Length: 583
Image (tube, rainbow, N blue to C red):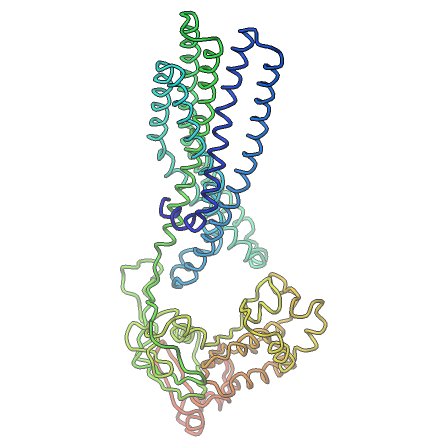
């Protein structure tokens, strides 16, 4: 928690200093109110004039009014500080998660990550915006009450100090009693979000298979665990506030009895006796709030633990430090590449079967590789290695003559374009979907490219041109328009290597012809790997690689393989068995 405070509140120290000044003023006004009432009571008992009493009453009202103004300012600046700091925390946490490996996302579904990045950070936001401000304010108020009580009478000051310290250290000792239960409740929240995200994204399949009852039953089970976790956390978390209320009742009784005793003995005026009781009652405010804040501190502590858990996750892919890749098409070499998924699903300790075995190939800059193979043959895994979502278990993958492990990940991925059948579009403007939020790409370049790819008339019918919003699920676009936007996105970043998972295989012939033209332009002057689902797609390839069970069943120049009647590729062309390469 302290590390998060230092990292995210530190840059806003000026605003924090202003907030501290406001807190000091607010506490001073709270302490001044009982002093003015004490003076009014003693003045009235001593027969003071009505004008003097009216003056004291006016000062009391002014102090109360200023106290409310300062309180509003505290909430405003405290809220701004809390949201600014935690928004930075959200951004850093999201950026960190996006750098992690695929196994991390396999173990953490999107719904669970939303609960952690938003829900846990929101708890910290409340801590930064409200709880921390109130905590500091109450500590200052508590110190002021004890100091003024000692000035009033050492016995009164000693009694209040003893009760305050006993209450404080009792509550401090209970500060962690509910951290684990609140952490468990947060995990149950994340489990619920993950379940809902997965089931809602599969609504059509659940309905088609008649599994809605199963989904409802699963939700009921998770809801039960969530309810039990929150009930346990709330019950244990209420212990501090209950303890504080009991102790404070004793403090008020002591102050009332002591003030009355000293007044009867003539050692204290009636105003002083009231002041002692008023400070004992004022003591209730910081202690009650501290008791409640202990529970909120526990929730914030649990959130901080889970945030730090995410920050402590580390990628197995070490970022390279070499110079950037040169412009233009890039050569590609795979040298005796073996690959085994280390994140085995059931028993990570058990050896996992190899997915790729001794893959060796070479593409010169500007050459196109057609990649064929049945489902499960290793095509997608090979594409992930090229994009460096994983590192090979053995061997090396080189781009532009350099091992991918020596390249900075940002530089590497900025030089590779990946187009799949499943296009990811964002609920953002057309411009942002094309540039992926890169403000340095000029509009004229985008407009010219869309016109060139056949999307000019489509853009002309959009209500706000490049500023038109795309629906969250891309429902206001056809499949062809989505594919063309994805291709335009790749064009704008001018990659040296394009990985193409046959993007036109699910489209009608007219749209497919339009996209094929765009693909021809995209591949011109670039190195490419085409994961082919149909034989006609690889007619543009210079070389062919056929994978079978992760091994190179055949590799060579396309023209030579097609001319060799003994080759597998020639056989596929001869009999036209697209089923051989489906997947």
